[in-house]
Image (cartoon, rainbow, N blue to C red):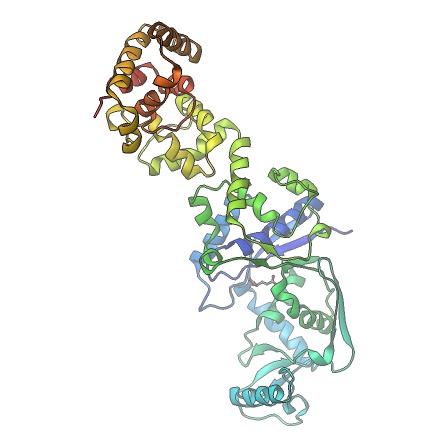
Length: 460
Ligand code: GLU
């Protein structure tokens, strides 16, 4: 196979939502898996709807996900001359004709077709008109009336369309400004795209595009139309990748989750990015539609939080801690230790930051779960905590082992059980009755803070 060249071709009219990210990802994976090129083309010919902010948001989201493109970005709006040249070729060889039909004419034709029980396929007398009119027109493609357009879609199988079912589509406006199905062909050919990988919503465009390739004498690429993603509520549909980043998803977790919307590799659920690249093949993309499942997405992310390298996780959680008002350096030893005690319980970085905030707040600023405090701060328990603190003050080397030995000696002398002090201590140290193990909590918190928090406990 010659070098694979695929492209992601977003229209910069909004954010990069999960559907778009999945299309970009499958193109990226296929390119990296085959050692080919992953190209980016910004389809910004619609000047009214396209914005620079949207282009930037798409590029930022792709960078965050680690989908770095090869070669220079192609901006469709900068290729007007090439589009005009291709249109001139079509005009010269009479592959297009001027169509003077008005919106009213088209509506009438549509109503007639529907009344006859068919669907509207534009065919009009303009196609065979001998003389030109001095009226407004558009350039329509002269679709063959006979025969079929056939292509083997890598995902959808063989797709056969009778040419009489394909309309004479508009390829350009009177001023020569080109429309999607035409311009996409010219630009894919320019970028020497070998495989067009895009959503199934474009499937009906493909026979039209193949006809245009053939009319222009250009090589027809291979096609892979990806299954649609279902279960997207309007809110989820419009949410951009960056909103998942802000909710505390890891790029590796999100990539893992969206890669599975249409692709699988045996029963394996969790993949590193490198593993997906290694295992991904367009041939393994299935036809059945994928459904968005937020619980699954969280679960996948949680697995990635578990597997993430500690130093990297510490770095990732820093901005989320900052949002909680905690300023800490990513290389801080306490942060690294704190991450290790908390990562198992968090599904997102937001949760991780919230759960571990207690380690970093000033001792007298610790927020309490009032119910837990009322329940566990009995007069007796508070006395235990004071005595525990007095004993712990003697510990010289503040390690989990030394802490546990000291507390165990205390409860043995007192003739009480660990459970009599465990929850009250946790409330005093963490602010709530849930948290990591007592010894590790104190070890990470440090001696000074631990003693301060134990002694500041007061019964209500
Ligand atoms: N700009 C088109 C879109 O965003 C690209 C379609 C294609 O990949 O051909 O849907």
